[in-house]
Length: 119
Length: 375
Image 1 (cartoon, rainbow over the protein chains, first blue to last red):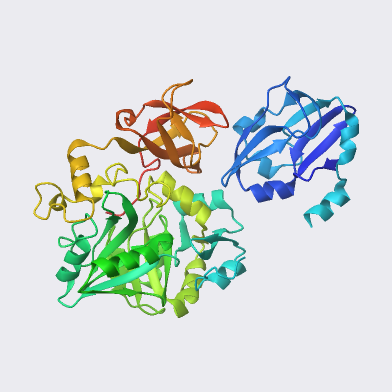
Image 2 (image 1 turned 135 degrees about the vertical axis):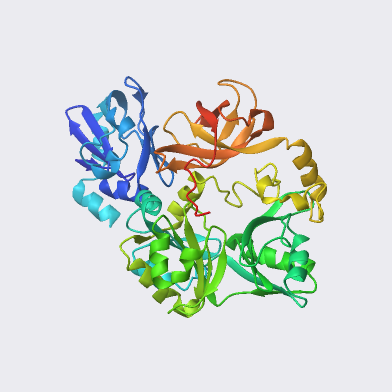
């Protein structure tokens, strides 16, 4: 698993990357009340804002970690956004992305580096 | 955090309880405790929540000739019937400016021979200056040696009666000065959550011990500013600076109920407050715009600043959201904002522009949750 400085976790399986947010991020956000996901089929470029997470405090964005196409979204988050707090690393994945440039994954931190990053 | 931020007498207790502290109106205040905003909100509606509101301004206004003289002097600044306010009772009011706008909102209590006034933290210096300048002949004493706590929720009475049995006899908007193990308490049966509850002024050096005794009850959790905001919004209550300000009149803000008949056109003491010409005219003929409740059809909250439209595409903005959040008790997003009066009817369909997309939102009755006062 890889981690971004925006507190996303990325789990790669071949050229498919599953994306969610870390426990640290979910704690910082507070109770999540709404998640807006991109449409399946959307072509994204690394750094695009593609998910909006609204918590009781504020709205924040999730960025596309790599270039590619959204191939699946987690529809269950629409009815149960609280999963982002209760199971951020598991059930509350946001989307699956088929990347056109797997080498971009090399830009991200491994777990040890991420742990150090959040201190 | 900046050294210039002021601290309340409960600062150390907040840290001990694990609060996340933020700057608010010049004070370092708890925005949430480990329970989190959502659970703090729900706990207050189900049981009881304890809030530190010591940042608010507590003032005593006296006139040499007693209550009536002080009430008359303050009536020159607020469109409220204070001469008709019974001893031991409190009223909500607003300071107005010459344009009819709102300088601050406040609670005014009739205590024996004087007035006890509670004003917003962010406005208190300006309010005090305003009162000093206008209320010649009155002494305006700023109370700096007392903290202010709010105990809110359906279990508030059961908890507080264990410490101060007399509060059981108080009803909504009663005030009393009562003796306790923590010294003299200045209590009002009121609050900012839509729930039954009390605001309690306690000497600074007794405040922490008093708060600890309240928190020792299983029913009571400490509640931060985050839940305070969602609770007041569900209750349809205005936040000064967001929902009301110097450019909104009490009529536009839907606060005409706070202007008693005697201060309106044809009343015995009609007008006589700043901006009376504007406000009395609006009471008579209506205001061009109104504060309304808004319920988005979708799940995305429409937050402060969201522009409102009367059509799904094109056209100019017709209004703006002034407060918006997720309502934990209603389980849905909610907002309030200003719209033209002809669009203020409940059920009117509007569109709020969220991240560039117009999302449907309906004008809705407030409060969003029923008030639970002990009348």
